[in-house]
Structure formats: structure tokens, C-alpha cells
Image 1 (tube, rainbow, N blue to C red):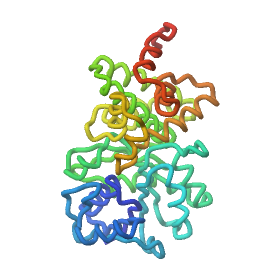
Image 2 (image 1 turned 90 degrees about the horizontal axis):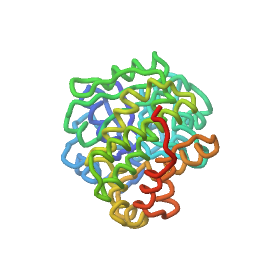
Image 3 (image 1 turned 60 degrees about the vertical axis):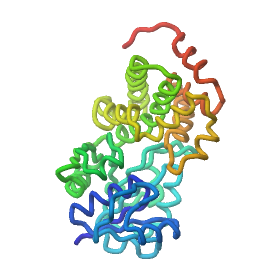
Image 4 (image 1 turned 180 degrees about the vertical axis):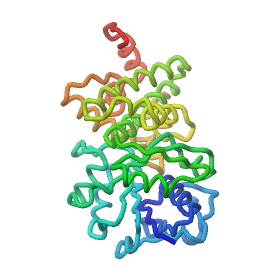
Length: 332
């Protein structure tokens, strides 16, 4: 069996490892924490992040870094955005021109404002950058692990993206190919921020009207920002734009929507984050995008409002009133 390494054993890394194992690959799932790695080996499932899905025989758990990528045809990074750079650096000297590199994280690096594929490219010193593919779309790990029909996009250089399409596709997991990596990554990042806003609306007790307005106007902000960053406008009407935005704003599985809901109910960010075992990518990403949009003078009132609620302590209801009473405009 051909070897694929998944770096990161959170819920998404585990779910993708299961997809690849079911597709007949020899999967090595890397966990940085020795204690957690030991638990994964003992339990033969990820009880912490994705309980109830036993590992098949062709999933192997590893904690060591040395020689981890030896003989791998593909390396999948499933790492939170603000930790990605340090993790890629651990493995950069093992990456060869024959390997494909897949990023599945969704966010923007705060310190640099870089997209995650740019972070990877920098850490591998620009080597083999044509081998980097972004895997993104409307997906929740919980449903992927259950085999719920799911559609996603592999974005990158067409030759590399088509290989990833073939590696991941099965009867329950369909992969399309795209070439707009910038659009895929911007959509993935912005939608997490907007999902916090959707959760805030839910927490306050607003209804479907509010959610529909937030998704639609949020999509307009996503598109405007993405195009300014070099993305293709059509990307945002696809799976990595509106598709991912809908699922993240509406789903019970969404960590970002969960954070927003608790904010809408009046809880503090400190309390919310201390209770969570998984990362809500929208929290750091909204800061990165707000900083970038401010610098570029791109108007993103919803993103700005969410930033102010999280980082400046503005009351959520007051922010909604501020958004609703902005100067009147044409829609388009």
C-alpha cells in the first residue's frame, strides 16, 4: 500500500485519515503529544476528538518526527492556523519533490497576515511549491467519519490537485478540482469569522431573517476582500465560498458558531475558550482579517463588528444596533 502521512490528529485529521485508510492507503497519523498518541494506540480510536470510529489496521499512530515522511507520497497538514508554521518547520527537511503537500487548516496567520499555503511555502523555502494543494469546502469531521455524503474542493496546480482528487474521492467523499487557491483559502478563513457572528445572532435569540441576512451580506464582504487579495469572484459562489459559509453558520457541529452563541448569551471570551478542547479558528482569524482589511481600506462591517465584540469587549446587542443603523446604501 502507498503511504500517506496525516500530520495532526484532531477531529479533522482523524476523519481524513479514516477516508484515506478506507481508500486503501497506508496512513500514518501523527500526534505531537506523547500521552495522547499513547491513548490513540491503546484505544484504536480518537476518543478525545472523534469518538466512536475505530481505526482500521492500515492506520498507524506516530509521535516521533524523525523519518516520519520516509516513503510518503502525500503529506496532509491538519493543524490549527497559528501553530502551522512551527509544525511544518519540524518536517520541512523531510519533504521531497516527489511528495504532494495538502493543507486542510482554515485561517490566516496573525503575525504575518499570510494564507496557510504561503506559510507552508515559506517554511519549505519555496521548494516544490507547485506540489501544495488546499483541501477545503463544506465539511464537518463528525459527518465525514460517519460516511455522510460530502463534497469538497482540492485547489492548486491542476496536475497536483487531480492526484489529490483521486486519492481522497470515494462513494461518500467527492472531490472537485479548482485552481483558485487564494479564493479557497480566503473563503475558508472569512467564513469562520462570520460563523461567530451567526452564533451571536443565535445566542441573542434572533431568527431566520437575521441568519439569512448575515450569511448574504457576509458573503459580500468575503467576496470583496477575496477579490482584493487576488481571488476570482466566481470562487465565492462555489463550495469553498457560500457552501462552506452555509454549513459553518448553521451547523450544530460548528465550533465557531458555538463560540458566537455563547458570546450572544453574554459569556466572556476567556470563559468560552477555557471550556473548549478544540480550536475555534475564527477567533484569531478575525483579528488577522480585520487588521488586513483596515490596512487595505476594505470595508467589512460585519467582520469589524465581530472583531470589536471579541477584542474590544463591545456588547453584542449594541453592535447589532450599530450595524443595522449604518448609512443606507444600494445592495450592489
